[in-house]
Image (cartoon, rainbow, N blue to C red; front, side, top):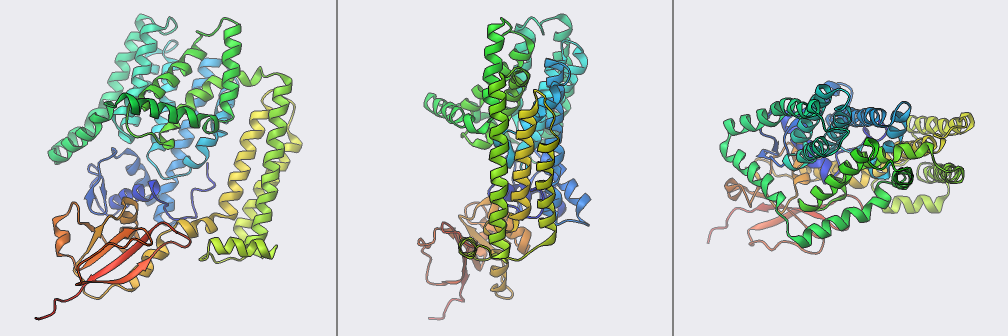
Length: 525
């Protein structure tokens, strides 16, 4: 969970605007009305922003604000792994919790997203909490209902109504239709879930309405139309999510298919361990298909039911399949670990020289050289990988353990040895600082034209400038500076009194240009 959380700037698009909201809170902004560069930003409720702001404040003496804020992601992902393990333990029995956590940890779709400053990580934890709550209901109805309601609340206060509706529908469907959950006490669990969810669902919307009824109406209007989609877009959204699952949920999905086939052959397909994750997968896919634009990021909740489906399949894999997975993992990750060190030698030590030149050509702003701490961390993860292989004992869980450990080692190498090189191309810090150097003294304000949310947030963070958007802020008309964003060869036509005083971009960025214009003093006729 930890490698990759610190040591780099906020990256666009998702991290940049998320940190922009967090930074406004740290600057004394409202806890109820999220803001971005001085403007209300109510696309998502504030739970994740508040937790990230608290984390940034807690670690600010030791780390930059953006790194301190990003550390809260480890908390949310840790909760996701914990409650997925608890759900697997409840559904499949002892020793299954660790397998489920490792399957989830080893999913390719999670590796990048679980290290980004995004609100979806908090909602991901909420989905895991709801799965545990539903699994617990038959044995401890009130406790399970409390966890279900709390998880729904976490999801709502992280992302919104649509996402919170997914586990709510799942819980109701299972309690009403499946014999394992259908009982009088289970019905009371739904009441307990509602009781625990209501504070999460009501307090923030009521405070928002109290402080700004117009913004409340805008937020509610933004939430509700997501439920209405045309048939064509529903099909294309569903096709998008089904098309990415083969890599996104790898390697859990082949094991899940095996577990489903084995349950079918044993006439155990309707068992709780099958029905909860299968129903969860169906509900999530359906809701994602009918709502909003399809994005890989939104598929995160699908990983939890797939991991729960795959959990009983790990112990029952045929010996040939298990050995194939094991040796594929060993050879693949060992190969990439050696490749990582080879590229590090070229990048930092200049050997081989031809590869060194190529790496610095595509990242021209990177300051290469041997750095002790990344080297020692990379060496530690590499040594741990080979130590694991030497000491690994024979057990049915070996393939999933080796896969999760290998993915961890490879990710750790990437984010310790190459994080500075990657950050050179993704960071806006140097770009904004170069712009600040040319700012004229005594300017009134800076307007923005077609500048993205992430760029506006980072200009505020690095330069302390709140851009006034021409499209939404009437005060922008009085500004004597204008920042425009566009393509390299497509400059915005402006009246002759506007003079281009600066043009910049991130190193190696071939698609985007930021241009700063100054309004000259009108000449006398």
